[in-house]
Image 1 (cartoon, rainbow, N blue to C red):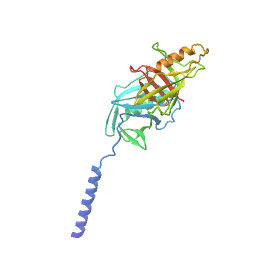
Image 2: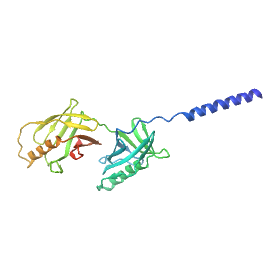
Image 3: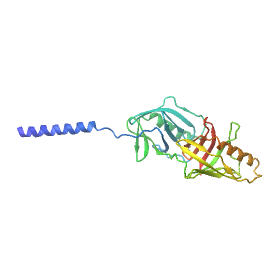
Image 4: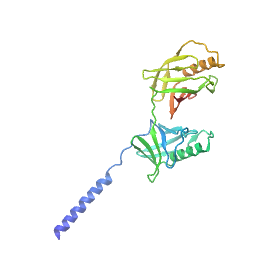
Length: 258
């Protein structure tokens, strides 16, 4: 009987030690979110719309991006794997089709409800207090090298961002060798570029000297576009879109991935 009790006591002691060690084991450390950018890849119970990309860029103490319809910005805090987005979030107020608005609301709702996060298999999961996955996001590349873009709007130098003229094409292709080139609508241009994080600087553009007569104002558009490139100070990715902005934060050009 004494031997049996000793064995039982030893077994209980060993079990207690294992349980204590298990309880003391720290939760897997999660990478910090600051400096990372993501694109929404799934929402539970929804099929994502193809032309309503939602993004989240964490920088410093703020998260910002697009919900697929409007741009948003909000403060956030993270402690370990704990996450809180907001309060005092702000967004633009553009109206979009109902389906896009519903998806946007589901995404921003997931951000607001998130109490923890987890990075698994390279993807960011926003988690509710009970551990349920609210949204999953894939990493967004922040590198320009090797990318090609079609310009959708540019600053005309008159405090306005205007659309590209019909039947013309403005493009930008960034090489790994630090060169950007493309069509300015009539002429081909090339310039040097340097990027670090969101910072982007473009050197003076050299262009061919062809004259184009149509469509009307094509040469004016070309001059305004090349002038806008000289003001670029930052580049920000939004899914398959790219925003080039001045040092003051004004839009210099908007682009779509080619």
